[in-house]
Image (tube, rainbow, N blue to C red; front, side, top):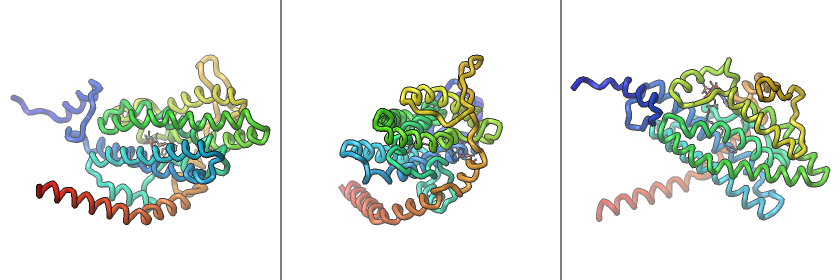
Length: 313
Ligand code: FAQ
């Protein structure tokens, strides 16, 4: 039997749309690319708990509080599935968390904006979760098995989150003039930051080429951004809200909306650490990490005890 060429096996799997699994051979750059993307994604889920968590104690009804609490807990769970998927590539959770806590790791730019009113909780669910799903539906078919499987579950939960946000926006938009104004104000502030979530334009996206070649991403940043705009305009129309973009116009030839680009200088500034809430977010995350130290120690001690008992049996 001839020698198996591992690179050919890897390429053949990609060509057949088979998954690459943790014990399979993979190019070092593929492994690094996945660790980068999945760990950033995990950090985003965890940091994403903060802007909405800010409103749990001030939700306007018991029902709203319960729904928001469940949603924020889901985001924590998403972070955990994703850290586990990244660990299967040979990086430790401590290493990833350390990069986050010391400000070295990236996480989604969107979570560095403040949630100033209850309407912002609606806008985050409607727009931010809406954008997250648009991106994550394609990631369900990502070539790395553990990432793809995590995304299937995450997408199911995200669609509930998107509805939770749209429900809040519906109540406010069909409520009093003051409530409608709150909804419009939230849309005005969250629209362009949401468009930035999809990443830089394709012409300036260094990672897209490899991501597409390796089927980690299946569509480009601009394709997904366009689809999000097309889908969201009609939802805003139903609410009677105006998307804050004078350049937004239906283009019959391309059967899609033309729209203005976000301010990419602002985007770069936010991911460099200079957004409105970057510093506050890292302080909160570090505090939670420190406050949770005794819980982690207790869980580890309990796990060790269980293990020793099972070995002794
Ligand atoms: N923010 O070459 P590309 C959620 C960085 S989940 C910060 O285009 P790529 C759920 C990028 O990392 C939201 N940094 O990179 C939720 C790269 O830097 P690097 C998170 C960004 O990877 C909802 C550089 O710019 N979702 O929200 C951003 O091909 C509500 C060049 O960019 C995911 O992570 C950004 N927006 O494409 C939770 C999905 N965009 O690493 C709570 C998975 C780009 O070279 C409440 N990730 N950068 O130093 C992806 O699909 C991709 O990583 C993209 C970026 C699309 C984010």
